[in-house]
Length: 182
Image: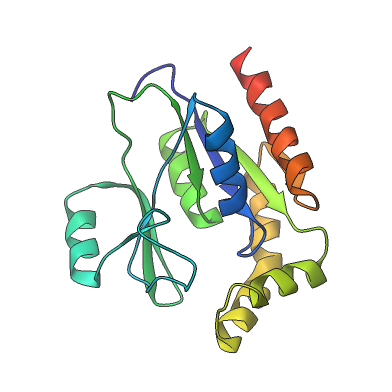
């Protein structure tokens, strides 16, 4: 990895808008590249290969054994992993991962910047989760773990951004990035 490249990690509970923020950030900043995670879960109705690299469990496990992941974890019976970055790409690496993954990356890269993305309220988070098309048991499980994810995230975060307005949250993250690049 380039010595000038920074690792920027967006964490927060599922449904908080990390993916939307990440896509918006890379669309507007040519110095950022978004890592596309691998997963064994099936695509949601609105997702495509542009969102995740969808693979079967055997393929994922083989890649993990070969050391192809920066970090990986199992969540609700599905595997998720972040591929190692292309060493020839000097852009800052943007990751959209869970707290467990961020902890693994911080163990390897103590200078990684962790931005905790928060919902404006628990009710808004629940509405966003229900709007993703997941089944009821998945929504309930996500809501059960959300508070713990936020608490753990506060222990490792460099900054917090409340995603109550997409444009404002995007601007706040850009301000954080500008401060890093000075």
